[in-house]
Image 1 (cartoon, protein in one colour):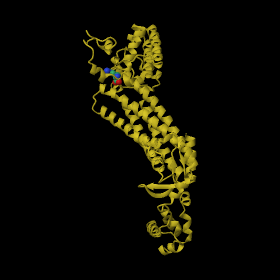
Image 2: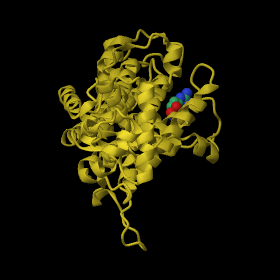
Image 3: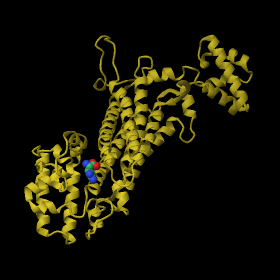
Length: 464
Ligand code: ARG
């Protein structure tokens, strides 16, 4: 017997005659990353021990000893005094082994009626549930920062784009509220995921359930789950909740990336719409004028790794037969990294929005560039002169062409120029060619008019 002292094989290796190869230990151990589950693992074990005692499966004295031991272990871990061991593979065996060191035989009774398969599924669900709750709160904080900005800029005009070509003037507040809508959907995706995932695998044991008279509803309730999972095979195999988080996180990361891209664009000297705070930018070592929007670029860039983690998890699970396979140990690092990444990106986005300087005069100057009120001219012909829209569109196109030839804006054409294009274009049309008139007229539901934007700001304030 060459069994190593303190290896996982002490706990399950009765029929093994030797310890694992060093490479096996290296590929197999998850303690390096799953130590992040320690609090959930202890919480799950406390619930399990109480249930075992309540159901008469272990004695109250053993349960008391287990609870005391687990409390000591939690303190040890939190004070940095716990010696994590790779030989003990993962957080579950590390804690269980230490428990037995501390309290002796009762520690060896804790694993009655459970397996690491339902244990890890429970721990990871508890961990992911907290992450979902944090995501919802962080998303709301970004939404609030955007709503406050939108309120300040409800009437400030900027160019709206399609194809990144100047299209029609919009209000900056309206533009910012578009992101609030996206984030609200993200928030609801995380909230949905939470509802769906909040069932307890504990007591599914290895895969088939257990012959002990466990009370799965009791542990479910103690751990804040709505109910126990109804199928033990599914309970230990299911990692949909990880996919749900990663899918929601990927879509969120894409939204944050689009916002970050706009911040990058708007903060160029060519746009000059915003200036990112010094706190979130860097200079250049050779170009003294540079102010690089690094934080925004990183929010944009980090979306790639979040999306990658979703892809990796989908592929990992794709070919797995029921039930647990060790492949599933690969669920954690990607999830942990995605959670850390989106939380960082949300906080950074929120602070960038709060601290950036906005230049409404620059936006307004750009808002009319590119004949952005050409649609207003056409609409005027329809509204005031009863022209069919298609005809009005071609009249307006001719006005644009004339302005291009003259090298001026639509509003700078002379009344004679306009009359020469179409007899119906009288001086009154100038009233609709200004960018403020243009946005003010877009009063349709969800439109860009300052009045509509203020209504939306008020709605979001009451929701948030
Ligand atoms: N460290 C393992 C994981 O994260 C725990 C479950 C191990 N189960 C087993 N049957 N070996 O997936």
